[in-house]
Image (cartoon, rainbow, N blue to C red; front, side):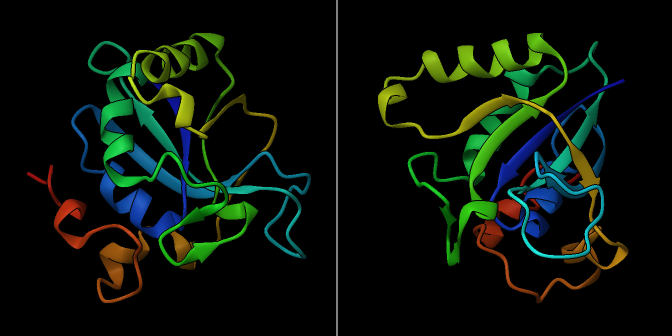
Length: 157
């Protein structure tokens, strides 16, 4: 099992969507690349993200990228839907260089690559979100989500 971290605006919808993607084993809501080691305190530069665990023999980062691009606006800086601010930026983070290469290759193959503003960076820090944010839309389906509701369960079996 291996993992990659996807930031795509408010993490509630990103987690709910990605947990149903084929090949995904587990997801966890969290914060990537901030400076703190806890969820307490002020914004510290992090991006809201979802840790996605997958079996490398059944899925790859390059294979996950088309799903991820279904739910983000890849041209928007620090904004997804009504969520605005640096913590809502889009990004792909990993501790494995091959994952970052696969993400960049996916973006580079697109005809709109010059307009895409998705960060692709090494993961320098990760903090899991508090329990109330884990699987939030599964527990509270009427909460706000910037992702089109018809997409949230598109791959649910």
